[in-house]
Length: 207
Image (tube, rainbow, N blue to C red; front, side):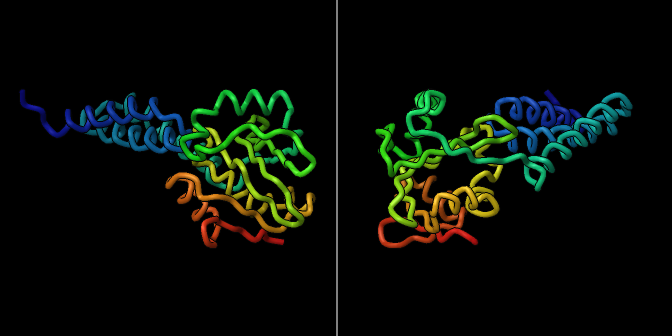
């Protein structure tokens, strides 16, 4: 069967749209959908179909708009300190425990204590992750630093350890210390500004 260039572009565009729908990451979904819609615009031009061009041009603009929100400075991010045994936090962690163990295999739900700090990481008013640690003076030793799949590319950690670091400062925390976890988790820590110190990673929080 002979497939010309125009048909090939159409097949590629269709495949990209299908792949985008399989993404659990909001950013990846939007990015792949953007490429797919751009390919469909090219396909529509080649077959001289105005409806295909207009529809997919609109989809491309929408994808660009939402990617700008996702990766730009208009995200509504937050971190809320909660008790370590708060029912919502416990249910959230249990639901995501298998995924948590992919990155931090040694994590176990902590027993509430005076030195345990727990936070729910929020995105647009919805829970997107959790951070749990034990505070020793001005240092927070992290037991869990986790973001769910849909928001893993949304730079929540960049905000938390940067502009959002005030949530730590209010607790008297100036330095964050954490074990490396798996290789993907170690890479994430390095991208978030942590420095390798012996067998652990450390980050001095900005003022």
